[in-house]
Length: 528
Image (cartoon, rainbow, N blue to C red):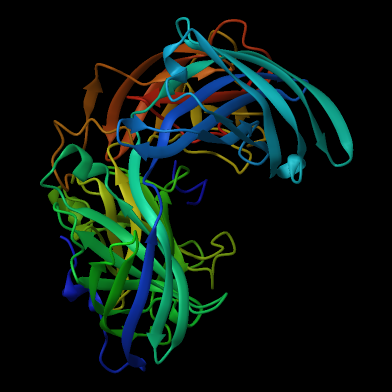
């Protein structure tokens, strides 16, 4: 998303074969062996803190746990991955594990010698380890020490003042495993499946949805979208939702009968049709919350990337909704210029902006920015873009209840912010002559996406406003900040945040916690 600009189931109707465009249709036969592994719980015990990593500076710590699911709940080991984020470019990857599933019920816990496994920016290829000591008395505190080697230099690390929370609010439960077999006449395949059981684990009448990836070689693969009934049987009808290489943008249907072999494996046999994408057809390669994670949510600004999503004649500055005729009747547009529609789980999204990589160097790939509907569906959903009358293959993304994020001014991670006089807040170098850093003790204006609060909103309305009685909890370099919040326009939330007294000069890590879900790590504010 441009920084300066942006201040059930299976449906055969989604096949989208377009008359008059050259496509290749192949009838195929499936003969697959399916080998499940233990079910897993992901995003359990997500740790989010800010503090200082001397001598490297202020940092966000983010660690997310995953573990096997056993009959009596969560098993062991619980494996944590994540890292220390100094800004949106420079970060250290961390990996640790703990064997006690009840570790978070005691007074504290320790990750001994958490491994440093590379990173980004100046910490690319970093190695080393760090011991993290967590204190569960009151707010989750952490201190630690270790060393990091990056670019041939070893630096001792001392972690101090890390404060935050540990949350399981965004746990998702999966069944997964490997696949081997044949898809004739195309040949042998290997692959995997992943089924999201989160909804069905809490509602025994709910369907489980998931994906199957079948690899023909290192470059070419297809993705299937599958449904599992509440009783555990796989619905034979499946949809082909794109792929890679020769099958990027592919569509089609599969009828696959899955039976239990009685030895812990399953067999899948059936037939299908693979329709390759026509030349110039739109292909989605990424869907994410703008400036945030790979999940999306209701009433959230979403970034969609791909190829042929926008015409190659799109103006260099892109096209936005400023002149959309729908605003005259108080509505937001679901069609904009050459973009006929964007749907999320079959619901129209509101199209704000699009640009083409052919005419705009800042668009590394074609991009569309949309606001999702108020629909509260959770779990894997299909995103479809229709451009110039041609529909893309569905792209599968996980939709959650919330997907909080702070939009950024720049790639370094400086959050979009203003002083109370509405002048720009950021380092002086950000917008020379226009931006100035915050001061300790000053109240500043931030904006956020993906916070929810849908109760008083009207679908499609071009105006949204609402006070928020329980605002997010934000911390700056480990210190809680006072926050007042409100919905001020569609999908946009205003946070009035008071920078804690004593906040040191320089870039300070910030994260906000909304109902146990956290803004994307790497966000910073400049203080002087």
